[in-house]
Image (tube, rainbow, N blue to C red):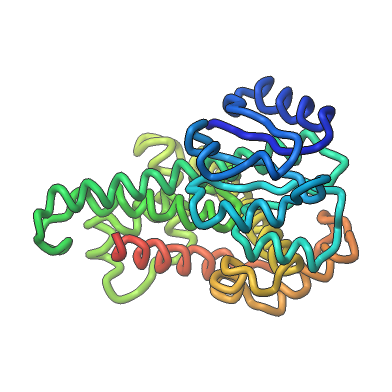
Length: 309
């Protein structure tokens, strides 16, 4: 990934540069001390994938800069500022930023956010590649007539995109969920579960067998099933926290509006939002999750996305 940093504080620019380069997140394509020096032509020339920009700057602030470049800039934007005004943060999100990081800079938060945004870019490019392949291979024929790639492969890509939107693609449980999607979409599973969605217990078992092999002992499989269940619950909890955070910042956030009530009972989403607002310890969270509902909705969303390709 190629980054461009815009901040009037040279210490912040230096710190962000060190974080990105020291953790091999990408390369610094350029930097500027004010938004007035940034435009779509410069970002295109530098081939920038991710723009890191401060909110308050002497001549032209981050909001105005984003407003000017947003219609033309194809990359992603992360805003970094010491301002915690919900109104200004909401405006930033409405203009299309991916994340809002509050100063003072937390190294771990910056790394996590950049990794998520980078993964989203890679997934977006993957989907675009699939679309181009389909256009080239179909030659005007319908997708149903000649799919470009096997369904079980493409549903994994579609699932990755949804998990990325949910802010959980970096969680280890995401791989288990993607393995479940592949199994459900496979011809053998489709024949068995044509009229009824498989039980969660069966999905855990199938994922365990896929990972350990048919010759694995019953004890080993049971251990892996429990581990998989824990990984998935942690990943789903992360998705709930991510959506609640988006809703807390901007109730009209499109990702929050699209996914919150689909994947979770909204009562639980609201409960999580209140916990975040009150800075309640996450280990004592009372918000509940429903893994079976989550997997079912994930499958439907992945299929829906797949049909759009």
